[in-house]
Image: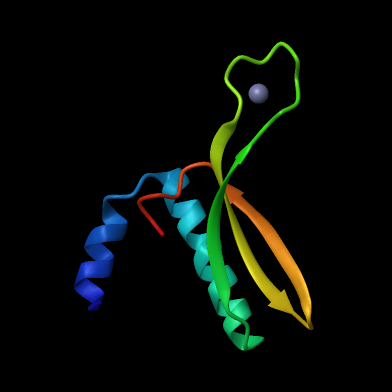
Length: 84
Ligand SMILES: [Zn+2]
């Protein structure tokens, strides 16, 4: 991707989308330094409330990577479909 395309794409994002994008970028930069590979996945979550009629909830997005042999996850947010 060239700079112009990135700038145009970012210009169309809302503030909340930008915050998530920043989180993704921060994660990616940190994790690249650690020589790790990060993957993103969505999960549907059951809240466990008996009165809930809309389970499962989501999708909620998580970043997953391995650091020093340990599997790590980080919650990113609810709507990432357009970014990832
Ligand atoms: Zn529920």
